[in-house]
Image (cartoon, rainbow, N blue to C red; front, top):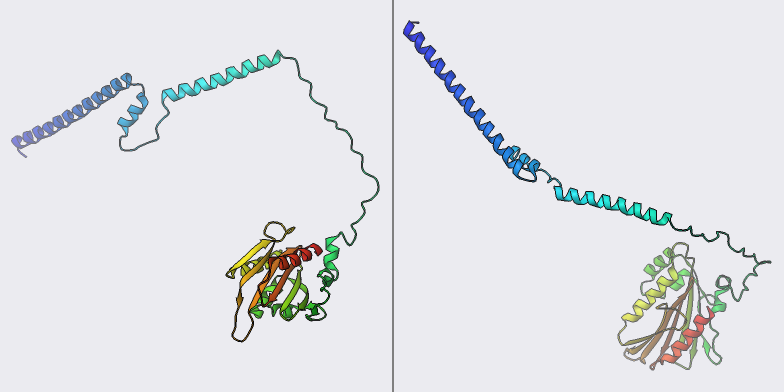
Length: 296
């Protein structure tokens, strides 16, 4: 390389070095100016730390710090609590101690002897486990008996036949732990018929008696032109009588009026049915229902 070329290369290198040094100097001066500006702003504002963070990392939002006012209030609250505790302690220390009531109480003497068991007439469980037919109303004198089942007892299959869908009723009764069913029926005159049925459930897993009573209520209430009244002594909604004012009519037959009652007591579901060719007064179905519930 000639002397002129070497000199040119040297000048170029020096120029580049000078330019780089100038750029570095400018960057350093800009950084110092920024630092001085930030310091001035921080000195003039209350939240210097927040401002510094905002300048240093403006693109990364962070949780806001608790300001000085909040810290001062918190500190005052702590001081107030401590001061109040000290004052309360000093006031209480100057008071005379209050005597506490005695922990001992009067001794209640145990009654002597043994509790007499309930009689069979008072013990509902004994009554229900006995002959269920004895809990039915007696057939009135002068009426004709209508035989039911086997001497008043109905099997599960016989009782299920009372329903529109015997197969479904049989399955439901078996699932609900059907135990036994007893009934009585009579006729007065040529068209007035009464039927009373008591159905008992084991109720080891569910309150089936009340559920079947509710089922009776449900279907009775679906009939049109029906009046109903609660049975006294059965509780709210546990016993109701229904009078259907519109009869079933078929060509060649007399009108068929019905009244019914549904209630439950313990594990026994009670149902009463009255059929007649003329409207049935409320008094008749209510009288039977009240007396039958009373026997349970």
